[in-house]
Length: 294
Image 1: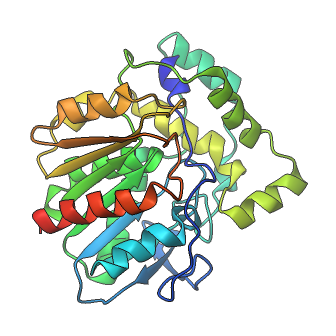
Image 2: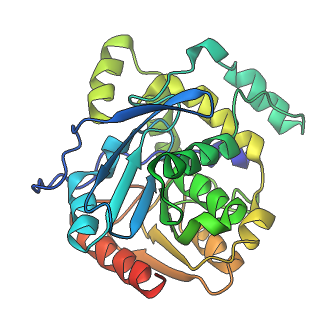
């Protein structure tokens, strides 16, 4: 059951400082990758070192915020942003059906295999396909929340494509890790129960509630990924908020413990979000990590 609870989303406290280089509303290119439409956009000099950003549960690339992306671009990086399948301008996979959550969760509780329309590995393959489409051989891979899981999979399964890994407020999915606090679970449930009117508003923010059941099944079906995470050999930076109530800090600490040579940084005043006052510190940590592992 704990793995069910280890489901999360990067919520709405991202930086919104506007710079000239990047707008979260800028146009995207849609390409048929892995037999589905995946939308992506890039920021920065195409000859600069590449950074692939992978967002979390139900979130499109818009949730990264302009302050963080411009910070990376200003530091000399080319940032690649894409919308995970089922979100943003990428294909909405409603035709795959909506899993009956109570039944799938019950099956998971008693140790039965759940029915997942697609997997985290499929989503990792989407990210690699975006790199292929752009002709990028290697990139720094950055993922937040569920996106951190996907980024970990890219680093583990496609190590020749990963210059380095940054795993932000993510987890290994190990069953011994602490459960989210009740309020954090309620916030997540509130997104799942969004009305049609509320859904339109959430789309403008970059959140796609209808993706939750399918992406949730992808997380649950992945199970405990500790051994896969332990196999990661690319240089890794693990970042986590000290006030994260959805994925408490032991989740980040366990990721760090399993990846040999990784570095672990926690931030006061950061929960399961990236508040504006912390974004400059995140940019410094990430760009130092990139520069040291180029």
